[in-house]
Image (cartoon, rainbow, N blue to C red; front, side):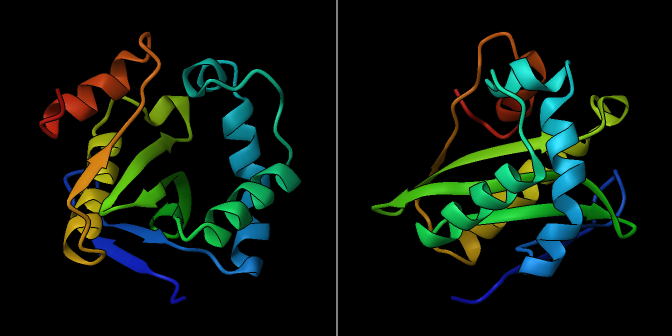
Length: 151
């Protein structure tokens, strides 16, 4: 299966969504684990236990084995988050994303990431439907999905 690289211009700056190689994933996994474990992010992601870099690598490997697409999101070469299209079946997939640094949340990055990956899902993968599950108190994610037309 090919590894995808999406380049996107946005008001938040130029972004790259990269399906990482093993080496790239090993490089970014510690920062992603830290972001998943951040006391602000963890409850919004539904995480009840701490993640390790090894857990992050395992998550990305499971996505790939299942035919899903996990992306690290980069801006100016630096990791700013991640996103994935999972559970792909019957022309549909579930979308999830994270803006890693709490200080960068609420500045349009989530909307840019979501728009970029949705465009890829419909145009490149030919999906007919993308859906999301959001923890009700995650108002920031709910706003992103409302901007994309979710009900």
